[in-house]
Image (cartoon, rainbow, N blue to C red; front, side):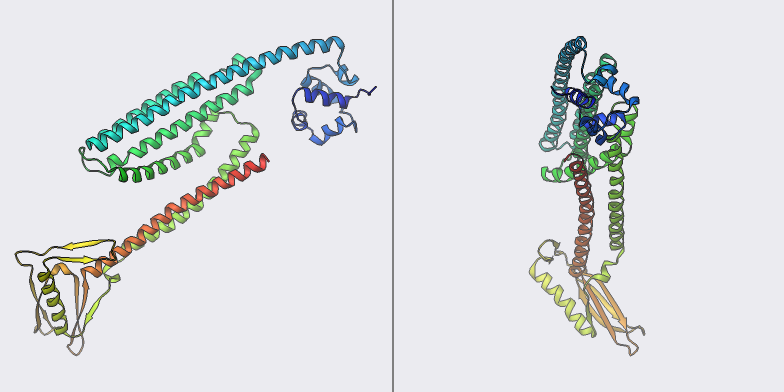
Length: 429
């Protein structure tokens, strides 16, 4: 017959209650290796721990020392265990029913938001009413948020009703609050998606094309979600925890604090890079585009005269003037049917007229005259085409810097997400 010991009895009680050695050790403030040594009969618990162990497993100290339950006590325990199993099943069914009901009501909030976007789309595309479209979307988002708040309040379970299941109730209420937060994020994104309808159009009776709205709306929505997430991480979650709308264990609080520190570091680096790119954009816009444009220099006034008059004659003869860039843009220079010929002269420092010429001012951005010590005059010509090419090049560089700025924040979000995922994998191998 197998000898009954305290260690084997503790192991049987622990398994019957669905506890791990680590969970038992945490409740007794000992290491899990100590619990393992007890169960292997390498040593016995200290006398001071026996009352705590007996209380955890609902046995007496005498039963714990003898390594078995009293027969009468065992029967009572089995009856109590069966009753507890029934209560557990009833409580679980109640939680599942409450959860399913809340999820179904949440779909109503999502549907209201989507219906608002559909109404805004019809108003914008069919009737070109941008302001009305935004107001419709905003009204439906507000209605969705109000409904979600009411649904979440009704879905919360008062802890006082089932004190025995306090941890399960807190976990369920935390899930309700987090779902409500996600719906709030959805409504903010939908509202931001509709914002271009009033910020990028002029007047009430104007709308946006679907492609433009989709592009700028998606950009606005991403920015709104990023701002909302940062506000939630740094401020809102703390308030929700203080008001007991979200419950976190000590381990979860420690994990959330580490995640917040990681977010601060990643965000600080991303903001620093974005500031450097912003400085580059400011410097780029402060540059003189004329200094970047290609110049044509004429050391002889006759050559300059022949150049500008030849340009005018070609422009007038072709019936239309235009400047082609690299194929991605075109600037039209229409011919003036009433003329368009302008006359000017080059005068030296002595007041003598060196050259008289005619030209079309629309073809040129700037003429720069200079006179040498010998009295020779040279002319630097910046054509409108060269100037616009310089402006176009600067614009492309500026667009690239803006794209790099956006990519900087996207990369920061990816790094943060990957690091968080790795931490979860380490904690839950």
